[in-house]
Length: 211
Image 1 (cartoon, rainbow, N blue to C red):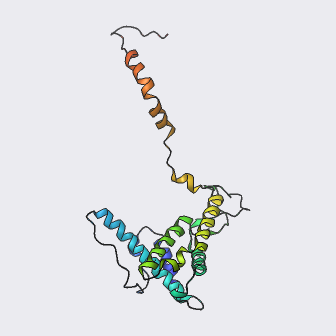
Image 2 (image 1 turned 90 degrees about the horizontal axis):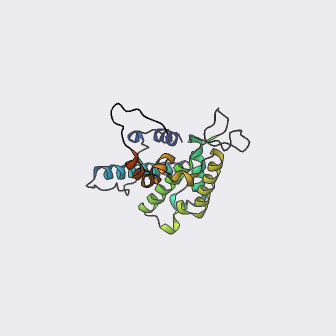
Image 3 (image 1 turned 30 degrees about the vertical axis):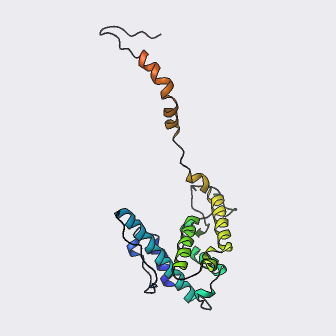
């Protein structure tokens, strides 16, 4: 499993060019075609490269499984085993209910709670593997990455981490305007006309009286 550990550690960095596994890449994987926009091509290329690495990693996991598993025999239960296995390489602190920092988004001190894979990372990983399975000839109705058990597991992880870390994923997605911006949006129609008539500079040498 050394290759999988190296893969997970290298992909935790921002340098995607160093993320490579063994030469087990399937020839049936096709990297996204060119696009008139360079940014779109780069984004597509990164996604395809990441998807290929994820697919190779899962293939290595099946080969090292005891007993070894073929892709045709892989089920949702095996996908769950794979996700739980990846937790040992996680970087996200998930507090237990007994921890004094349970539900605290920014703990003031370290604690012995375990590190896990973040829910967002697992959710994106399953999405890429689900697509790679069908690109490699798998049928959608037999796709183990789209199994109901996998969806329920991801939902459970999301809710658990949301409570443990004090982070609401639903609220995090919404971008609310700053209170100062809200006041600026509400006041201009009422305040600006009055200022236009009241702002008069006194003549030179005149004293300013406060009423």
